[in-house]
Image: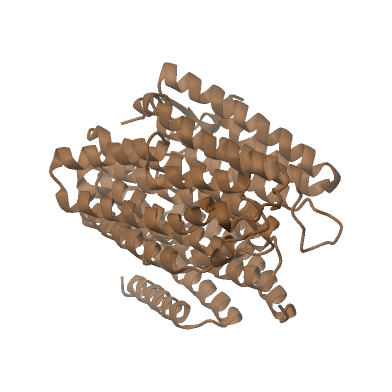
Length: 93
Length: 477
């Protein structure tokens, strides 16, 4: 019960930090990191919500959601890093 | 394999072929876009005659499996995407876009466009919230590629901001979908009325709407959009502004119809944000000094108008207003695509896109200016265009309900849109002493034909608006 609450609170905390960072920061690398933290925060909330403390059984569907989310996150992070690199390279014009 | 599966698989397979085999990219792209248009029309005709269809992929029915549902609204969006795609494809096939990545190859547009097309088709057909999230991701990645295609520093910066805003939006969407699952134990679209009944469910729907608002560039979450749409190549802007933004609006409309009266508060927020977008977008369009920026800000305003219409819908039984929203989406797609293509041609002929520089002596207005004017008429909502029919239905529904403040807001938005579009059109209309006797005429290009074709479609749709309205009658619920 208590440990479940810890995951929920920590996930919500990560969400809040990441959203604050996204809203206040323009630096490309920090924004990419913030987005990753945001995704991990959401994943944490999701995983915690799939666990039923009364029975100790974990629902696999939220885990599948999180897995898809991770795949998407990896792809988008790669695209973001590629764009950031191109931005660094093209300081002219 | 029937039309619904083919509409998703054909563009995605063609995207792979075009990416793997750049030499054949153009021909693959054109054939796939044509094939997609044919499939969309066949499906629309069948739905118009036989009513909505549902398909369980792989034989697994909801809630376990992922369902595809094709009804009147989805079919209308499919046809809209196909038409705009055809117009833009004609333009790109005639004048290939420069590819910033590898010099000498001008084919990077095709895989990106085909992936966009496949993702949009899948999105319109999905009857499952989680599948919507997945299609949004495919769409987002492809659309960012289109934004960055021109390779300039501003375009790269805009693409970066677009992708990070889009990812934040999709993560909110994912959180909403997961909360919906935790509340109801299923994520197909039929669960929406159930969600609207409980407190947690409404939070989930709120998160989903917030994610959609980021993706649709709805005021005040539109910050990424004018830069992205004005710094991309005109052909890419046409696709982004006319189609990609519509994906999120479509989902908002779908949820709004499914949710019925229970999502009242969310819809009010949507309507207020829409009204704000109309005024904010119009204000910035009035002050823009570059043509593409004006057109991009006009998208913010027009998205606001559509969001306002969606926000004032009270479920499928209230027949007028959601039909108006759907028709406004269709007319905006055609007119805005025509407008961006026309702007691309005008910029090409003039060598710049400053609005103050549209008064010129040595070059007569050509087909592109004409197409821009027709598109402007449709966006303002003058008869006989599709924009007029959409606004008429909207105002009709609002007056029936006695919602006078909203009527006044819609009219104010209309006046403002007329004002900012007149900044461009009036400069193109000036003849006589302003044009030198020996002024040359711009040459014809494929882009002129594409822009004129799309603008004419927006005009003709107003005369034939019974067709989309009959199709909309075949919508589920």
